Every structure is written in C-alpha cells, then in structure tokens.
Image (cartoon, rainbow, N blue to C red; front, top):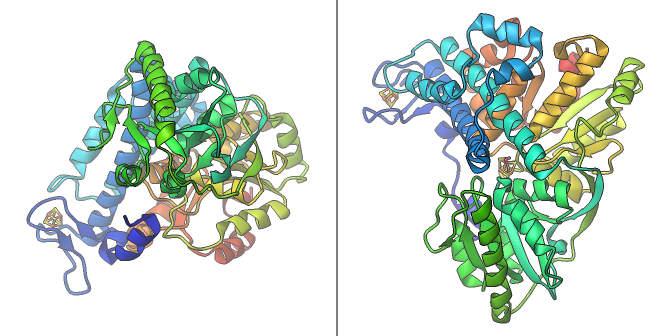
Length: 504
Ligand code: BF8
Ligand code: SF4
C-alpha cells in the first residue's frame, strides 16, 4: 500500500483550502473566493470566510484538548474544578479577558463556548470578521486551561510528575529480539497501565509513538520510537507484535499497513474506532489494567507470526522530563535579567511533512545566539533526532498538552521578575503545524501576550484584514501577534530587525 510520503505527493493541497478562502459552511456553496468572485453566494466576504475557517480550526483543536482532559476526569471519576481559569491564569490577564468578556466562568461552560463558536461561524450568523476572530482568542484561552493545563495537571497528579532522565528516541529503539508493543496517541490511561504491566515481562519491549510516547518517556523512561510522520514506519519494521492507539493523530492507514505485516492494531478509546482493528475500550482503571494485560498477551502470542524484520539503526540519546518544578527558573530568570540568556523560544507543534524548510537548524542557530529552547510535541522529536535535546540549551517538556508547562514557565518567570509575561523576551514558534490543535495552541499563547510564529499555512496571510487583525489589532488587547513566516532565514532577519516579543 502507498505510504504517507507517496500519498502526500498524490494529494496536491487545494490552494483555496490552504488560504482558507474556500467556504463549505452551507450547500449554496462550497464557495471559492477569486479575483472575480469576491463574495460567497450568501454575500459573505473574503475576510469573513477566512476568519470563520480559522476560528473553526481553533474550535476543533480546543475540542480535542478539552476532550483529553474530560476523558481523564471521567476515568478518574472526578469533577471539573470550579473557577479553574481564575485560579491558573495570571490575575492581570484574567482581568483583561474578563473585561473583553471572553472567559468561561462556570465549569462545563467551556464546552458551550466551543459549540457557540461553531454556531457563530455557521452560515448566516456572525458576519463581523473581528468578532469572529475574538471567538478564536476565547477558544485559545479555553484550549489552554480546560484543555492543556487541566490535562497536564491531572496526568501529573494521577500518573506522577516527570523527572529529569536520559531517554532514547527514534526507530532504532524497536528491538530485534524482543516482543515489541507500540502505544500511540495522546491519553495516558491505557499507556500508563501498559508501562506498569510491561515491566513484569523481560521479553517485552514497550515503545511509544507521538504524544503518548513523549508522555510515557518522561514518566517511565519508555523509549520513543516515532513522531506522527514515522508512525507508519514503526509498523513497517515488521517487528511490532501489537500497536495500541487511542485518540488524535492516528492515521487510518495504520490498519492497512498492519495487515501487510503481522501487527495487531488495537483501538482503545470509544471515540476512535478503525474498521479492521480490534476494539478494546478503556473506561476506568480496572479496564485499563485488563486491556493492558490482554494487549501483552496478544503480542506474546503474535511473536511467532513475525516475518522479515527491518529496523533502522537510528537511535539518539536525549534528556527528558523537564517541568516548571524541576527547571531552575530562578537561575533562568537571573540569566535573562543579566542578559546572559537573550530569551526563551517555545518550539512547539507538529512536524508537517508538507514543510520542507530546515527549522531544526534555525533553532540551533537561535540557541547559538543565546536563546533557550523549550520544546514539546512532534517537533521536539525532530530536535531529538538532530541530537539537540541536551537539557542544557534545549529542554524537552513533553507532549502537546504539556505546552501548559511552557506557559507555566513563562508565568513563573514573570512572577519572579515582578513583571508581566508580555514584558519578557518569550516567543512561540510552531514551524510545521498539521492539526487543528497546533493552531489552537498558538491562539492560547497569543492570549498570554506572547508573539506566535507559524511556519505554515497561508491562511494566516491570505486576507489583508485578517492578517492585520492577527498582527496589529490583537496587539491592542493582548499585546501579542500571530504571524506567518515560512522561511527560517527571514524569521531570523525579522527577529534581528523587529525583535518581536523576544526584544523585551
Ligand atoms: O498533539 S505535534 S502531529 S502528535 S498534534 Fe499530532 Fe501535531 Fe504530533 Fe500530539 Ni500535537
Ligand atoms: Fe458559500 Fe456563504 Fe454557504 Fe459559505 S456560507 S458556502 S460562502 S453561501
């Protein structure tokens, strides 16, 4: 079967879609805005269509992260915390957001906000593009707190906070002579049970993939075999006896690939079923344990069916497990104050294979220039492959929901400095976004007053009014901007010339 790289080539991205200048919000369309068709059939102008598309991206991302936290609460049989944003956000920001009327006050109201954002952006509702983009900011805040913060906090409490340790990453962590089980996706409920259970079997080699992988690497030292881009390659080694998946960033193609090899693909979340895979849902601690045992048993029995194996030798040592609690924030703050460190860049998000620019060298250059790099998600994997995750200038803070840790580092350093986040030299850079979640994360950091760079797609730059809103109007309330820069060299020039939020 065709693999990701080949499918990528055979699917040329639709230029209207890349620009968000295509609207599919009703069946009078889909409408495409061109130089001759300046409005959709309903009369919606380009800026409304682009703003709606962007906001719906953020709504999708926020729904995924809030769903992650919600699943955890259900699993733990816990209730939503009251006034969560008020408790976690810097008070000056909370006041600003409250004044703007964009912060949910009551628990579960954040789900209503996600649904109301979809309501506002459906056909024939909100036609004020600025108003629509304010919804995106509101959703960014929701994504940050009721998604990333809450999920990170619950996982740390339930499964333990990560500790700084050495780990290994890349396909070479898959073992030639052991029974390999891969766990892929985002939530920790099953992954954690598997990590505990697998310890009992000398012949089992558990490896992680994507964000779940980053989360169990930081907590249990389970090696990280792949990020999203390499998730098919994990199965294609021919050495994976079972792969368990839950939600988010799981390619349906995995089931076809598993059929080409001997791998048993197992879905473990009610939300994410794939025809052809074995479905073993995890709903509580008891079922997590039982499913973990069953997966190990299935993998052990399946070992005899292994055929030709081809495991790349690629394997890198990295330092992992950094959190706001174990990083020396006082030292960081003093170094920033004395200008021994120029600032902190959060290198976050996906590793979209549509993006071919060398962003790894860009971050390396920024580090050489005196910046500290905090990193999460699939881009962190790329930095690890390049041997940069040394725990000295590059720090791996975990999965994408663990971007809450980066936000928390910013908040605590601001506290230590007696300043606001906005006054400090911080930047978020998401060079190769792929999912809606990556866009939502960007809007969250912008709501904190940090400039946010995206390296892809043109939707941030396709309509002058929307681009101006993201670059300038946003600044009035949030003191930040969201901007597109696809070239690492040009971003470097921009930082040198304009400083962005790093020049504070
Ligand atoms: O949440 S970095 S491709 S794996 S979305 Fe997905 Fe992007 Fe990877 Fe994790 Ni984050
Ligand atoms: Fe076209 Fe308007 Fe329908 Fe969008 S909502 S598809 S612009 S008619």
